[in-house]
Image (cartoon, rainbow, N blue to C red):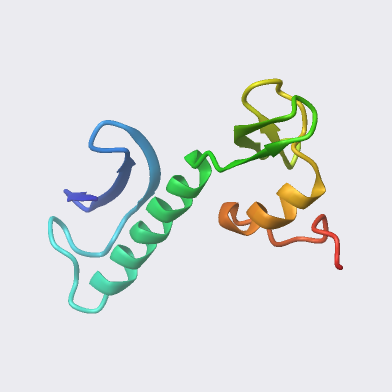
Length: 110
């Protein structure tokens, strides 16, 4: 997290990485008294979201019959096996979707 000349940035995994959050606090070089908690909280939320997006949970893939790492594809809203690149299936999705911030109706109710 960096505040410089009135511009606040949060880069991941470190400085000069991917900018995951930015904004313009009132203070110039320091936070105004009442905004520090807000901006640092937003920065922390952005870091947590970035970490969730790069996690690779491990689970059983019934397509290639192996325990495999998975990756989440937000565009298609699904988890895919890193070995065979096929969908990991509904049970895997239900177990891991919340860690990626997926909370909508695509998760079936049981």
